[in-house]
Image 1 (tube, rainbow, N blue to C red):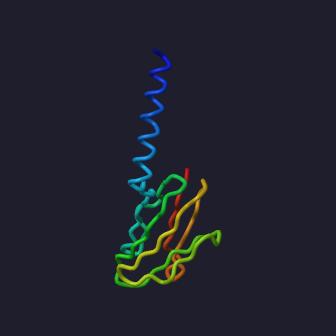
Image 2: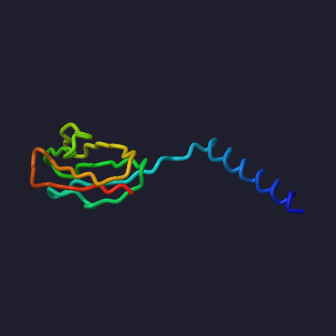
Image 3: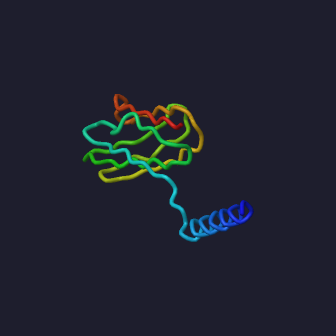
Length: 109
């Protein structure tokens, strides 16, 4: 009987994997809002492979610039969006170069 259970488990595993591939598993996403001259949430913690999407809810332009040069957004007008996918673990500090007092952090673990 143990062989039968093992075979059944393998069939279920491969059926699930095939179903997931057909459905197109969605990559992880996380949102940061830019509002009232602040990034929220701050800090934000995500897993490797997560795409962080920043959306500007202010009426003035902002941007998102990583301190280590990993990413730089264009200037984001009202409702403008920028996204970046974090592939590896680490702590990534960023700021708005238009308003340098605006600072944020993404923690990937």
